[in-house]
Length: 288
Image 1 (tube, rainbow, N blue to C red):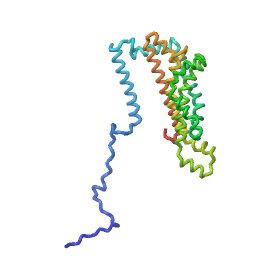
Image 2: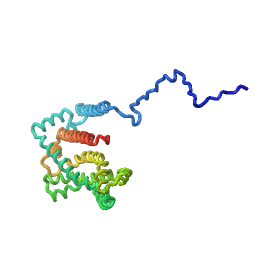
Image 3: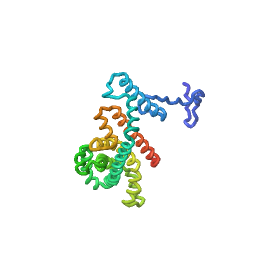
Image 4: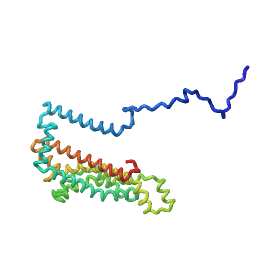
């Protein structure tokens, strides 16, 4: 019986030339595969394409006579009414008042909520004291406070700022507390090992680590603030986009109503992009 030669494991194994020369097969990208990333250009085109499709469907039903102009104005009528608002009714002043109210109330809420949220996320005793009340108030609709705020502050600017403040402050507080409380324990322990005190832990570990998350929280809540300002302007207001929408509703002018809604969306979208760009510039290391 012929003996089978034993191959030494230290000797190199010969690989056929056709296999050694064959390059690795590239991974094919599937556009509809789950979690498959989309390029920046494709993302912009897809987003723009939806708006084009939406306007096309809107124009088809309104210009084609399928929907009465009393209930829904056409895109052409909406644009004409928008031009009229700027040229005849000083709509730029209404826009300025609404923007001022949104950012005024939002800044006041941020000044109160961010330090309180940091304290709740850092010290569990502070969290145990404030969290039940903040969680309770978070579920209260800001619009429900309008009758009381009119009694307390009148129908001036203070009432509108307070509506946005109430609608934003509790949301920011809880979200900031969760962000700060989710700090990595290993970083905290390492700081203690290096001799840091409690104040140094807060100033050099917790706040810097939570800063990108806090900035993202503020960006999200700013979008919610836009919904509160319109509610505030629907009652007892003589200026603002919400006031214009209310007047247009009384006149059954759906063109102006739609134009006001679109202006709110455009301003909100621009502010969101600006906030996101600022966050990326300030916290580039966090890849927001």
